[in-house]
Amino acid sequence: MRIWLATGAALGAALLAGPAAAALPFDPEQATRAWLATMGPEATARSNAYFEGGYLIDFAGTAISIVVAGLFLMLGWARGVRAWLEKTVKWFPLVAAGTSFFYILASSLLTFPFQYYVGFVREHRYGLSTQTLPEWFGEAAMSFGIGLVIGTVFLTVIYLIVRAAKNTWWIWGSAVSIAFAAVMIMVAPVYIAPLFNTYTEMPQGELRDDILAMAQANGVPADNVYVYDRSRQTNSISANVSGLGGTTRISLADTLLERASPAAVRAVMAHEIGHYVLGHIVSILIMNAGMILLTFALVHFGFRALAKNERWGIRDIADPAGLPLIMVLLAIVGLFTAPLQRNLIYFHEQQADMFGLNAAREPDGFAEAAVLLSEYRKMEPSPIEERLFYDHPSGWHRVHNAMVWKAHEIAAGRLPFSAGGPPAGWRPDFVVRSARPENAPRAAEQPQPSPEASPAAP
Image (tube, rainbow, N blue to C red; front, side, top):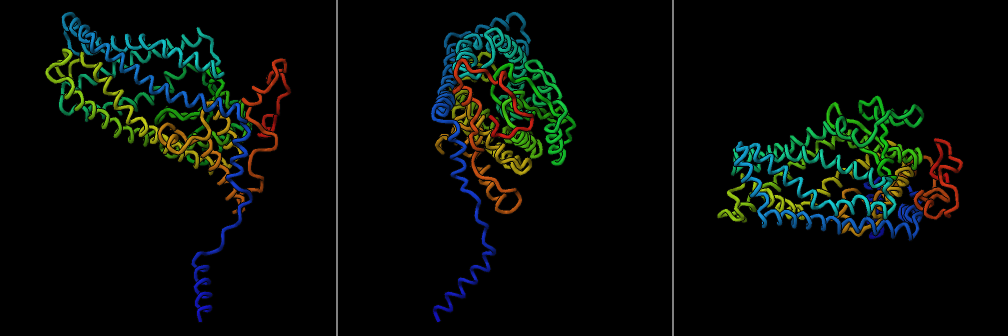
């Protein structure tokens, strides 16, 4: 009797469970390991060192900004400028604008050596920059000039809001900040990005047609694909979706076209199309509204506690002389909100990854792109490390997700069979470059593969 009951229970469980899942054609874990192994220990160590060094740079940058702002406070520089402006121009908007202008200008000059090391020296040390010092300095000066004007205007508007609503400015200021960010997102692709890079229409060809077809099939009203000369600044690969409303454009770097296979390009562009289709620019703005509101609230109450009784000669939070204290508070709050901000972006990037896999159906191309990105991103962080410091899924996660997707699609009969892992003999180009003897011809001098070469091409 017990045997019959046991048999009946087993049959019932089997019926409820439905048909058994098809066996996977390969082990996604082993396939992921095979992709990661193509980097080799030297390139992996170099990538890890570069990315981990970024953790220290982030903390050092915050510490330097606090020290600089502290100097302004203790030495009374901002207070002196505000007092002089009140005697000369008198009108509050000009006082706020002049103090903000002075602070941004002076603090930028004081921190320039650090920016030079991070943006030029370190990038060359790791072989990522393609710029000469005059080229880098010219772009840095242009960025500084743009930031000086935009920053001055923004801070002046914020001070006008603070003066009008001292106790609730952090609410109104958050709303204005998001509106300001939305305007900048719309303006940047049209007026700012072309100052640093040239955007051209992608040449006619099968790959361009594939990208446009993929975009249009997913409801993206695209009639063109743009390529920008990222090689002017770096040899790293990238693509992006930028703009808002009528200024939205999906662009890919010339380095991506030069270094990646067509399959990888399609995978990367599908990811970027995913950002557009899923409305990530708007959702990131909305989520950032909460972050800004929290930050401004903490700054407001922290300022009241620290600057009471006109400490440092600051009258109240509407006094532009208190700008250095606001910057100190923003830096300190940023230490705690930065991981939240990174996780917000991470959430959207993970969504775009999965959209891209389903749209392009190029798991090997997606894995290839993830490995190429590991030239400057640590491939396999610890779980805590990834949660605290990553705003994109790690290379391991991206390759693993691609291999899991591939294995299940093959098992379901929706994808032709192919083995897991990279094609035989494939290695990322930055590993091939580092292994090439000094007297060997460079890639430009070697026979080039056809435009539709596979990832296995040397």
